[in-house]
Amino acid sequence: TQLLEQSPQFLSIQEGENLTVYCNSSSVFSSLQWYRQEPGEGPVLLVTVVTGGEVKKLKRLTFQFGDARKDSSLHITAAQPGDTGLYLCAGPGNTPLVFGKGTRLSVIA
Amino acid sequence: NAGVTQTPKFRVLKTGQSMTLLCAQDMNHEYMYWYRQDPGMGLRLIHYSVGEGTTAKGEVPDGYNVSRLKKQNFLLGLESAAPSQTSVYFCASSRGRGAYEQYFGPGTRLTVT
Image (cartoon, rainbow over all chains, first blue to last red; front, top):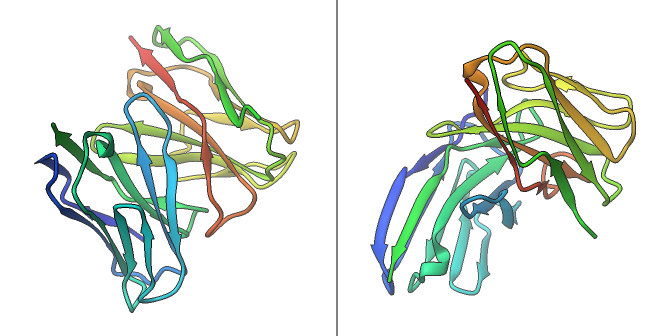
């Protein structure tokens, strides 16, 4: 069974701070995805990374896929209250997509 | 495009009652999924479908049944609801598996008393 471990589980920071959240596994993934879920809504895809070592940027968000394709990180620069939400990583596994348990981020103005 | 829609948004059931959740997508996607989301447990796959007329078990299928009679619809049934099935249920669809984006509906909050 392919498991994705996300850390930290909870993160509360002040507006303007930088942060990094992690998604780790003992298994190799052909690709990893990051979703963001806002309260009362379904998850929405932020990015898909498919190549080991790949770095993708989405405005203030930087995503990195580990060289060995077993881990990924999401770095947010100058966090804003609009970044508040649950960040989920996901990758293909025994079922079409396996999700981590998520990092719940709260950005305080 | 409405994307993925779910009906109903909220429901309260008594133990032993039955109900059906309806999911519809207008993106002509082959794959459809039902997940449940519980605090601290993340998203867990209940059942999924790789095309019209097909269904497959996910991680937590017990107590649920599904049907995909039409490509655009995926129904989730609870035959005899239990308090352990209190959860938020999400439907999703995608063009394929793996690196394909999954599009999620807004969720159904179900409480079983």
